[in-house]
Image (cartoon, rainbow, N blue to C red; front, side, top):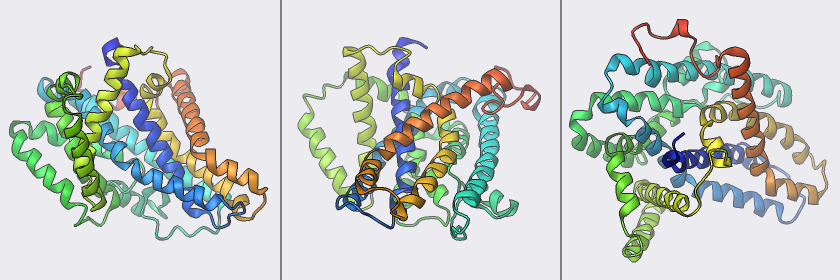
Amino acid sequence: MKKKALWINQIKGLCICLVVIYHSVITFYPHLDLFQHQWSQTLAKCWVYFNLYLAPFRMPVFFFISGYLIRRYIDDVPWKETLDKRIWSIVYVLALWGVLQWVGLSHINDWLAPDRDLSNASNAAYADNWHEFLAGMLTASTSLWYLYALVVYFTLCKLLSRWKVPVLGLMVLASLAINFLPLPWWGMNSVVRNMIFYSLGAWYGNALMEWVKTVPLRRYALLFAVAVAVAFGLWMFNMPLPLCLLSIVGIMRLFWALEQRFPPSENSLLNVVGSNTLAIYTTHRILIEGLSLALLKPLNAGAWPPKVELALLMVYPFAALLICTLVGLLVRKLSSALFADLFFTPPAKLRPAAATR
């Protein structure tokens, strides 16, 4: 990997870490019923609120970077040559891991929480039959909705690239409106909300990157601080778009500045994680489900001493992140070594015949 791209890859690493922490929090802390230590409930609430405040810094920059990295396919590569890598390969992983998540989460719940009521769970991974599963996948009601979004975003950006400005205007309106007029499907709401960030990266990524690198932030520090304060206020009124845009600028400038002062290595932790986001993203949800259900039962039964409970609540998201990262890296390595990367790359026989690499 070229040195100049390492800071971008490290941002990807940060984003996938935040995604894993997000799922580790929402599947664990809200389901705690018993708190033995006097600080346990407060700590659990802190993690829930901290997770909420991370929202503007998680998916927006992830999608902007995703769009930025495929901009060549939008402008310079013909449709036939994009079908394999930018559409089919993602659809393959989405379908394969959608089924694996469905099977995995079903068996984990049957084993660890057989009495758990999932009848109102609007997630394809909790479907009772194939019809519900397919309906969930087609409406992006899946923990893998990021992959669903990548296919939709790329297709729209390539089709509508001649009309960038008016389309971006519509995307801004859609991103704002979806917070007040949501669709019936939570995943589709996320797809609509984040489309603007991917499109900005795909269509204007180069210009924005150069601006982020060259703008003298110290000169505009006060203006930036005021903008952040206003954006935070709008976020409190369910209008997160301005804060999300500022978070993209802030995170990119931070990582670019860090690279100038502390040049990263290809073997640095965030770079390794950023190079394996697909493996960590697809595998972590199954692991998180098993970890949370395995720990919730003894915690809600008061089986462990209060100090052990407090310590676990303090470090659980970090421990889950470590486990999910290591397992994701291991699965990718085994997939490459033993199965020709079958779990993350479609077999040659299943690739479109007209596509070329």
